[in-house]
Picture 1 (cartoon, rainbow, N blue to C red):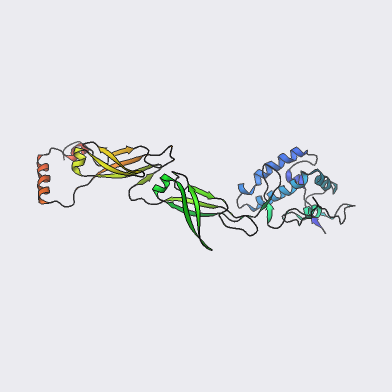
Picture 2 (cartoon, one colour):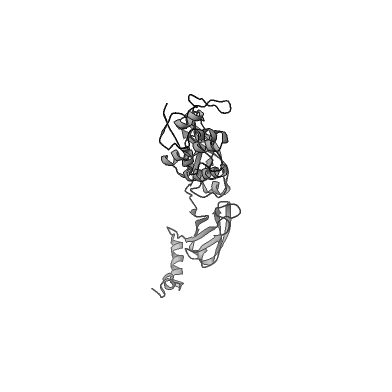
Length: 316
């Protein structure tokens, strides 16, 4: 049988006289360069990575390297190999096992009977030697909607996913203050692969809309509604936070738009939470009784205040 010869020294970019340490360094350098994790979707890099592993599997072992060298140091890549004299019809085993050669070149199979079984492929550790890596299912990404209260508290949450085989409920630990868009990884909960290992599940955090708060990074914003006399005379009013209601002191003469900072009442980790910014908004009654209208009219007639004077630099 004619098989295509591969020059393993050329693949690892070393001389035939290279020491074991030099071969190891060359392998690590090339493995980093062509590792599938660093070249996603690059079939050429994936094929190169397999060839590098195949070459290193032989040249790192003194006995295998010796046998490989005996088969002809002057062969060139792309020639057909029929076997050197004295090696016709020789079958090789390693560690007392025969190998089916899955994932290896014809040349490697002819010399060594192959290595690895079906369902395994070259994984390769860029910082170590050859390893057989079982095939792996695809990773799956899903959305994890959280209320701002859940984000602030953190803790374990039950998540129900709709899959092709029906609903599946998982427990996930949510770190307190997790940012929107962050991903939580659940190892082995992704797509399964027959005879291999399942992929991972990634849950992407999405904040649910809140009826009171607006999110600005780790800070929150809300509005504090005041009656005109509360804004003019001052008042103590309740303000909702994620940790419950607190009382806020409103100084006399507080206009709409004025903001008060409640420190540590926002989002973020327990040791570094953001703030809550409470904005004053003045509301007036939609309808007035006759008595109320008379009082408002009396105030308008007696007051010298003009809201447009300070804003525009003169009386309108």
